Structures are given as C-alpha cells and as structure tokens.
Image 1 (cartoon, chains in turn green, brown):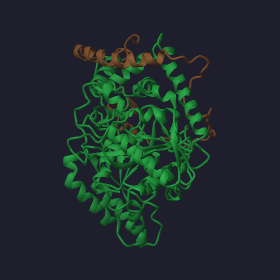
Image 2 (cartoon, helix red, strand yellow; image 1 turned 90 degrees about the horizontal axis):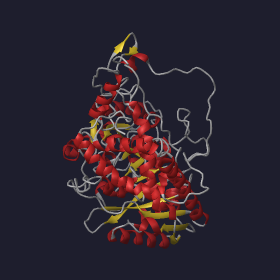
Image 3 (cartoon, rainbow over the protein chains, first blue to last red; image 1 turned 90 degrees about the vertical axis):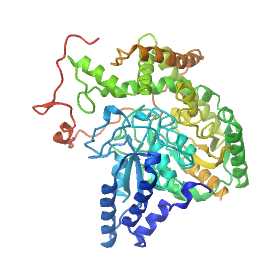
Image 4 (cartoon, chains in turn orange, yellow; image 1 turned 180 degrees about the horizontal axis):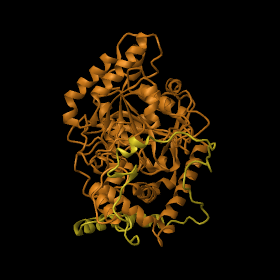
Length: 480
Length: 88
C-alpha cells in the first residue's frame, strides 16, 4: 500500500510495543508532536494541539506499564479527535465562532472510552462548521490542506482528522459522518475511514448535526487499525437512547484477515455512474482484486439511491435547524447583547454562524414549515423508506455492495465554494448509507490521473461490519 | 424564514442565499414529485421505541462547571435580557 502514511508506525504496532515495554508512550508521543510541529502550520489539521495534556497522558500510561498493570488496548497510541466531540475541560468549538471559546463540562462517551483504552489524545481537529460541508473550507478558523497536495482540500467535514492521519500526526483519528464526512475525506487523503451501523457507537457528547444520520467512526492509515479503534469505541451506552444493545460489533480484527472467499458483492450501478474516468478505472481494479481473492462480483441496481442527495438535503438541514436552535446565546457560547431576548438570539446567531450553516438552517426551517412539511420533509422521509427497501432487495442476493467513495479526487481549495450544489454532489455515493443507517468503509485504492488518492467504498447491511471489514482487508492486501 | 430561524440577514446575504437555496430547492422539487403512494415515512433507521431507564436518581453535570461557561450568571442561574412581548 503506497502512500504518505505508510512510513509511520501503525497503531497496532505502537500498542503492542508499549504494552510489551519495548517503547515508552512518552517517546511515541514526542515523535508525533515533532511531526505536528513540522507540518501543522502548513496543513492546519488542528484547532487545538494538546501537547502538555498528551505528554501527561503518556506519562500515566508509562507509569501503569512500569507498575505491571494493563494500560489498555490502545496503550500510548496518539489519537486526533474531531472538534465536535466534547472533551471536558478542553475547548470544543465545532469550528464555529458561536462555540469558539466553549469548554465542555463533560466528555463524550467515545472520548471516555479512548482514555480508558490508554490512547493519548494529541489534539482537536478542524472540521467544516458544525460538520456541514465536504471540504473543511466552511471552518470559521480557516481550511485544512490536503497533505498530499496542500493546494487542495482534504475533503470534509472530518478534513482535519483525515489530514492528521495522512500526515502522520496520529495513527488514529475520530471523525463523524452524517452524509459521508468520514469516508469522503478519508478517500481524498488516502486513508481508511469507516462509518458504523447507526447506533453502533454512542453519540453522547457528539455535538448534534442531524440526529437520525450522525455516527462517529475511525480514520486510520490501515484497515486493521481502523478495526481496532472501532472495537474500542463501539458498544451500548445508556446515555444515548439510540445506541444499539445487541448484538455487539463482532471480532472486526479477525474479519480483516478472513478474506472474501465466497462473498457475493454487487457494484451499485447508480453510484458508479457518477465517477470520473480515473476513479471508475480504480473501481474496476478493485472488482478484479476481489474476484481474484475469491469473491463473486456483479453489478446491481439500487434505484432509489438516485434520489438520496435530494432527500438528504431536505432531511439533514431540517434536523439541523432543530438541533442548532439551542445556540441562542443563553447558556453557553457566544452572546451578542440585545434589548430583549429575541434580539439577543438573532444577533448572536447572525454573528456566530457561518454562511453554510445559515443556508442549511434556513433550508431546514423551510422544509419543516407549515404548508411545506409534507411535500418536502415528509416526502424525503418516504424516499428514505424507498432507499432502505431497494438496499434490502440488493442484499437479498449480495453480502456486500461496492462503489466509489467520491466521484473525483481532491479538488483545489476554492474550486467549489461558489455554488453549494456542486459541493453537495461530492457526497452522492456516501449519503445513501447514512439514510439507511448502514455501515460503510472507504479503503484507499490507488490514485487518479492527477496522482491524488482514490478511495473505494464497501457498503454492508445494518450490523454487517464483519463482512465489510473482510472485504476492506482483502482490498488493502491486493495493493501491497 | 430568516426570522423563524432567528437569523438576521443583510440584504446582500438575502439576495445571495435566495439564489443558492433556489437551486437546491429545484432539486428538492424532484423529490416532491416522486410517487410515494402507500410508502410509510422513515424518521429513524432503528426500530427502537420508547427507550426507558429505571427511575433512579443519578448525578447530573456539575453546576459550577456549567455556569462557568455561561455568558451571564446571577444567583446560580442563566441571566438573559428581558423577555418582551410575544415571539415573532
């Protein structure tokens, strides 16, 4: 597997070495902080680098190891955390002016699980404001740049997390995915990015964008590392009433090595259609690789996915307009004063939100307003049912589906900012999985004509993470 | 819409957003036109209904820590400007 992040140590190897006492967590964190110091100014992957906190956490891991205790499965592994995940005592901004100085009074459940696993959080990564975007250009604090070519975007909204992994700042990162925000930046940065089944990972402490679509997931240079992180963060959480109780996520790390012999995989016609010719060529190669590894691959139609984009851009903004109503200047975040509460709300929100957030709030408000509710929001909900049905039909005779992750490689900064619609099209392949609540993973698979990374997406039915990781592992091995 | 969403936009923003949102809504009109006769809406991908927990008191957030992040505090409460008249 060729790529920037290959030359850096894997999370699996670091954890093994630290647990065995072959390396100290302190030494590992210094190595990563040095890389951050070298390229962070150029790339802006982070909103906040946590050098002192990381050193302290690493020291604690080293103490546990010295004392003969169990430091956890991710002992000493540096992790970058998307800045829409609450970290107690540490600023969590959602890359928005409205939360620029906000410090959460609690940790997100995934953050608590990371700490318990011995991982060392090295920083909070940049994102499109409130996770709304596909390029990280909507950040109120400036864009992140693609480590493979800094004149280009890293994708979004988890662009900072993807760039951090691609640049070797951390072997692991956490992102969030509502319409593709883990998978698309992973593809554009040449790393692995996975979205689990809806409900598989607790959303407690994930600052909400669209509650029926949001999921937290791992980014990593390799499939085994992504599986390792996902195993650590997955599981039922009483603090999230949408979190799944049974079954658990399964033995993902074993699945990575299991191979695809006998698996039936379908390339989704409607999603493959949108790809540029070089991306399409990589997808063909992926098909051949899976067939060589023993899978049966054909083409299959999931017709309703054609309407996924339009349904998403009604549903997600509608949910967002409700979720972002809480930013009113009353209890936290920015307050711009006014003569009365109404005026204070308006001035605060107008000053605190960026353009894309405002657009989506208005779109959502419109879709939910009297007279339009059924035609727009209600209809989009029904389209969602059609998408789920069409996926069910495809999975009647397939174990997994395949598509490009993104239609093109990373575009230049500024190339798509004039017309929101052009930007929205970047998510056409990833959105259907969010609408259906299904897991999907992007695996790096070669480069485009411009030398930039291409990602191939494996889709699975709900709770199909093990099968998904079997294919991801096979795809990765085929390129080494 | 802006007023409903408690947003105050400049004239320039109003013009620009009207054009940009118009394009998105044209797309959305495709969705509105689809035949979904007899199709039930899906609000949520999981079949869960009424997830409850035992009615046992558990600790909440630390008051001081929460209030330390508030723009204005008085008597252990969030202080806001007066609430005047009816909502728009």
